[in-house]
Length: 89
Length: 89
Image 1 (cartoon, each protein chain N blue to C red):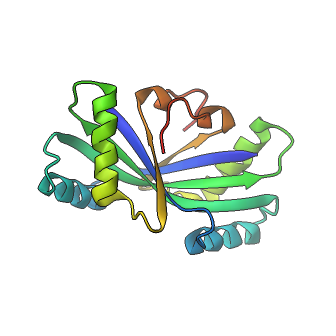
Image 2: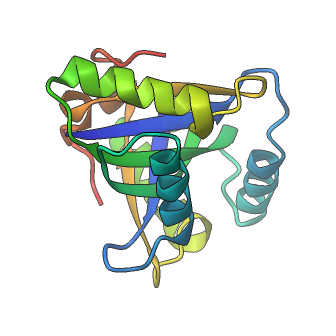
């Protein structure tokens, strides 16, 4: 089963990397840019009896290792969410 | 307009960070883990006349700065893709 974890800084925490990237993009001529934030995406494949079980295990991974609960929020997406509805590469 | 860019190492490129995270998770008891890869997620807000225009501008940002075309692939997702179909926090 394939799942995706998005780990992002909590709202209100200064995203230094995002600010640096935004500054660089504005310097390249992308002046229409508003907010920009950078986070991590972790794509996981694991054996599980059901999507719910897989999601629960991945949530446990987030709590134990993948996300820092003081600074970061995480979102878990399953295969349904991953369907490429118009996503381009 | 809000868009999300996922930047990942191309298939076949060794993901050292992903391998380290996987090893740590297996050590924590997540033996059912298969593949694990770590990438970046960049959430962008920008002014654009249409979703297509926004997507084109973000693709240009990826080409100019956000992704390293030698090592990385990128995927752009728009608001439609971002609808939280069962995603949990």
